Image: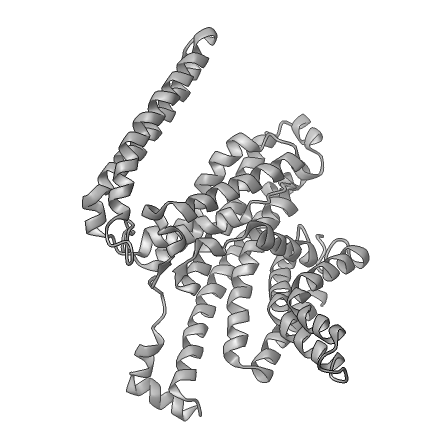
Length: 429
């Protein structure tokens, strides 16, 4: 009953937004709430199920956004002719050098393998840069105002969502192989640093993502509003519902995203619940609660940590691809690790760490408050300062403080939950 009541409250808040403000605003909150719930579900798998403190969430979300560009954007033939194949050759060369270095480390005698690996790394790096740098310059010189990058494969955008999960999972495997042996606080520092590296690559490698110029006009899985407004059948249906074509088209498009996102969330939630209640889920909780006892029972703790780290990161990658599809553009500068990673962690803690439904609830609730607190604060401060003189310094200070209401509210909510419901609104059973 508690679970149903809390989710009914979320539904009432979103419906209330539709009645009081507008249905477009309500659907915007709903769509980003669905995406946030998937992110929170991924973090909950890592922290709630395995106790892994990952602070690099935004890095994996950004990789999902990159997957949309690489999958759905049409290729730029001029850029490929200018240097695309040389870039591909440089990447293959770099991977080959890494493979040779690993092989040398494993096969050569202990006395010489360090020098051999260092020599392979140095030679490989200089050859790689000598091949990559001229190719990158040639690509970025191809109509830099409009393209200046290689583009993607031109495939349907819905394929980018699982590709985003796979790309994030692949990077998580590389990170996990090197960082999961660290203690929890060092793991948090490592994942945050790696997320910053990923975002730095996205912001600076124009040949891949156009950097700060952004990739706009991404394909979408739903119709365009202008096409709906030009459809006589749609215009007639909208008129029958008492809506003008412009409003009806925006609501129709947002509802289309809502259906797609809801299908993905329900599918992932069902899989997460099946995993949680399976023998594998019980083993993961045993590893989380006492690693030494789990190791004594023959469990490979490091391998299990790597497994759950990859799964949680894959969910964040899927959510990142969905969010970029919803925005219709890739904006690398919008990924702010400290700010939005904090927000996702608040979702998990407030909803209930270790409870998948709690993570979903926290995703919806915290995102609703994140969007609505500032206009609510504007109204509240306006009411408080209504009787003050226009030149009052206190009035100016209070009205100028509205922009800080979001972070203040998140902190207050977090403190209240940790004080009165430390296991979250929907605690783990």
